[in-house]
Amino acid sequence: MTESMAWLTRDVRKARKQGAADVARRRGDRLADLVACARSASPYYRELYRGLPERIEDPTLLPVTDKKKLMDRFDDWATDRDITFEKVRAFTDDPGLIGRRFLGRYLVATTSGTSGRRGLFVLDDRYMNVSSAVSSRALASWLGPLGIARAVLHGGRFAQLVATEGHYVGFAGYSRMTQEGGGRSKLLRAFSVHEPLAHLVAQLNAYRPAFVIGYASTIMLLTAEQEAGRLHIDPVLIEPAGETMSDSDTDRIAQAFGAKVRTMYSATECTYLSHGCAEGWYHVNDDWAVLEPVDEDYRPTPPGEFSHTVLISNLANRVQPFLRYDLGDSVMLRPDPCPCGTPSPAIRVQGRVGDILTFPSGRGGDVRLTPLAFSSLFDRMPGVELFQIEQTAPATLRVRMVRAPGADADHVWRKAHDGLTHLLADNKLDNVTVERAEEPPRQASGGKYRTIIPLAV
Image (tube, rainbow, N blue to C red; front, side, top):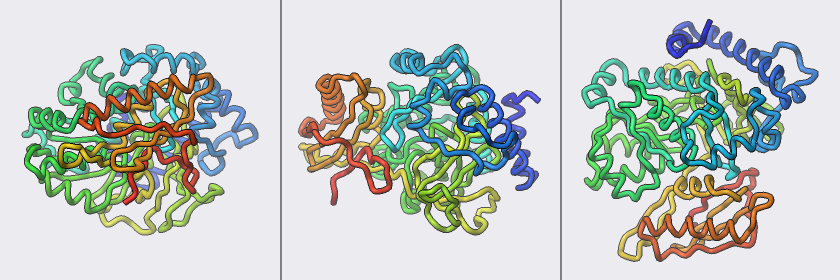
């Protein structure tokens, strides 16, 4: 059967109604189908899976991959042999192509992720449609009929807080939708997290969204503005994403806006990975994704214990398959059924904490900037292989970088310094000093690079 958007929407609703056994059957069939596709069309996976059984429904039989391995074998990874690293890099270097169809077929998304290393990802329509269908299922379950009716009375408008000026998946997807039209494009507007906070507040006050979706650290800044009375919107639902939040954070947001708050845990590699519940757990959308908490040797971590890392398998994207992909986060699988009643696996996330940098303005009071403002600046900067920004004093930033092969170190530094200086000036932080570090980025004990390090208190 053709997996049209309408078919996928019906299927994701039907999967939950039919129970865990049917979800497991769907998941096994989809994994087997994707492994067969990868073996057939991707030279990388054909080599990696040599000697494995013909049909694989158990992900633990597969070797582990990660961003570095896949990026190092980029031209052999894709199942569409027209896709090459040079073509995709040239495409992402042009901001005029954000949201356009790469090769007339695909969405391209870039990310530095929590590792600070840039990823170039090609996403097919099947992936985007599955993501939309799964997200619609979550939205309906969160709101219920009365909540949906209230959202309609509020105009049904979505405010999406995203990193703009780059091929990030949220902004690229939004740009695709607005370029290609359709009913949904009229109810969705992107707001740049790069905007000075006062401008963002004014724009949201004028738009009056029924839904606010975006980076958790930006939503926390907006919560303070709502509490102070400068922001005065009354959304039905707020959905923080991208960074871990505490229960006190979500309670504060709910009280400030008088809205329902539901979080999500996902990644560009699998945007529909999980959605939050009223009990503060993330539920894996396990009809279309596999999530495996594992130790350092990739053995399963027992429920109730935080893992060393987590492996994910995105069962929708056929053009660049993510199979047993090491996402690098520490998660804990709930050992008992979640009180919310959702039957899918429930997890807590220990990694991916968003740290807000706070600076003295020099004019009285403080100015706070989210990690995304800095990471997105470097993510779209040619010549930067890896970066790390540490606040070493209240008004001092130390920048560590690894330049890309062939890039001129002094030229890369000038671009980085100019970009940071401009960002700080836009936020009236001309008093902040930007230092060039000679040492490389520091690696944490868990093996990850923390890209933004606030001043130790």
